Image 1 (cartoon, rainbow over the protein chains, first blue to last red):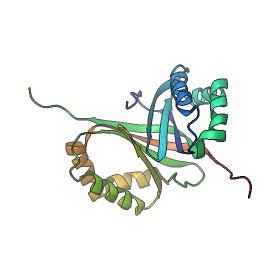
Image 2: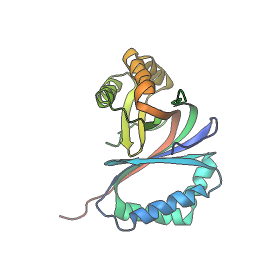
Image 3: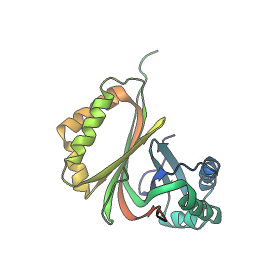
Length: 110
Length: 110
């Protein structure tokens, strides 16, 4: 659920969006894009959450991997449909992850 | 709701987390941290969403601004309480935003 990324540096694409009220095809296409992204060379993982605002962060080995995913024909078609139907507003940010650290609660006892 | 950030480069802190079932003080502290972060030098904006997974992305002018926010005493106390009570798992990623682009639906007519 939290992406199991390698040590930095690697890259992140932060996609922040607000939806329209049009659901037609949205969930199916969204599921398909997660499936398809995971098959791309250089894909490292993805995390996603939505309340009113949706945030999806995908992680990649290189800028080239991000570029290639953007060129994918099925992904391009989905993005075009997204602009036409599903999103009122979005912002995409391409980032280089410089540093990361984590925490996991230890279960004590037994 | 989507942060109105300036042209890149700038910095992002991606905080991905899974919660415990302990709610004690969580919402109040979370609200306070949003309020306090917004008062820090170099703060550019924040976006947040949660289903099971929570993702909060804060945006900053510089690594120094991120460092100073991490040193803030009230923030440090909140992070310690987070580890003790509210989170089973989290990952923090410090990123340099290299490029961004957006979309806003145009309302046609009238």
